[in-house]
Length: 526
Image 1 (cartoon, helix red, strand yellow):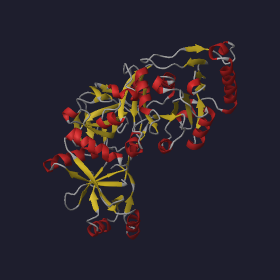
Image 2 (spheres, helix red, strand yellow):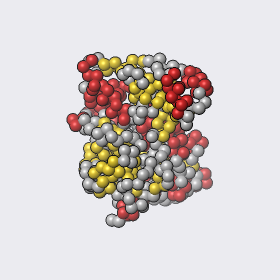
Image 3 (tube, helix red, strand yellow):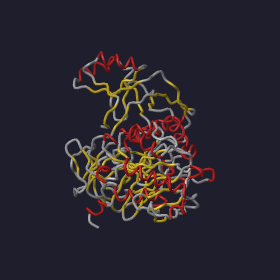
Image 4 (spheres, one colour):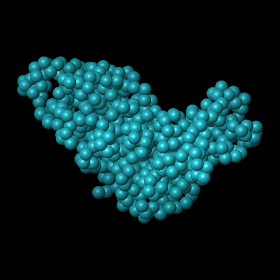
């Protein structure tokens, strides 16, 4: 295939949801229908020793949650699909926000009994800022759920996006019989999943009298009435409106029972956008440009704990990767020969010979690569829009084994590099501070320090509540502020000066007294 053909068949997307909506489960089922795995490691099967393919960190397996983004690649109907399963828990929102900079579309998973929840609202705000196309899967319809009309109404009102149902549920809970496929005019019958068994499909027009025999006269009459209402109340699916982020196609089903997922996947590969242009500080980069460009949106330490490795996840924006090629690490100005870039199925990975725009490749990282870095074939570019957020919670690590101090610092630095938390070192002394957006991040770091670095530590609370990065065009004013507040100014991993205060009031007061200095709560990764 030509470069243009390879690029056109790429589909790169993230799955977003509120915790417990079924995001990891639907990830497994997409892999199942995409032929990437033979049996889904469903959440309820964890006690039997199976875990979701996308959960590879020990604490994920123990708690049944996703706390780190997993990358999975598979083929479906001639398309090369790159799927990113993001953390659902709000404490790990920073990882999710960065992932959304690396995808071309998103799949939003809703719990049909709960509808739009707080985390979904926050993630959709990020998608809306970028006009990211979004498909919607209303999960768990085999349980008692919201009325589907109410569900669509809440999506439109709360998320500000037009809905276009692609399937429509026939009953719910114990009366759930399946869905009507509005695109193919067919009834897809629901049945409990048994080792990935697919569901029966019967082509029936709504007006066909045989529909009464298949689903019963009462259910058939209700379905006809609802489809008639839909025709008047809901606009038809418009691929262009979807690609502009103005309309979301809606599917109903039960992911844990493999139901409604295939219809979603078929629609996704057909209509989701191919790789899109990306902004840099100087220009837009088009995917059909011949020279390689890409950016690092994630660092993951210890994908293979036995090798203590670190992997930089690179989204290819243009050109193509070929094994052995030389790439310029723009921030350092160094050229690097890339001989062992990898592609992923979560923790499993293979050395890749070739990759194209939209693909995610992993580069082995010995500490030189950071989130936000750009790789090119020589051009001096810096991709923009990768965010970093000031933490709101702070802890000080206390070693239980004093002989492990070097291992502690190494572990904290590597975990901070991958974005698990922010690490701050004081201007004077070695009293490192760890900052996070949520308390669960400290539990994850404590678990990973023990499992991956053999370091036992506890995290003590400290009397700090706010952090801001310090920037100023007046270097003299900045130096004076730092000298006056040496006990409150720290350096982050990128050596940016950061002011840490006991309260938000103290932070705001310091900012008001120093108008020449910018106190930033959010910034693009430098």
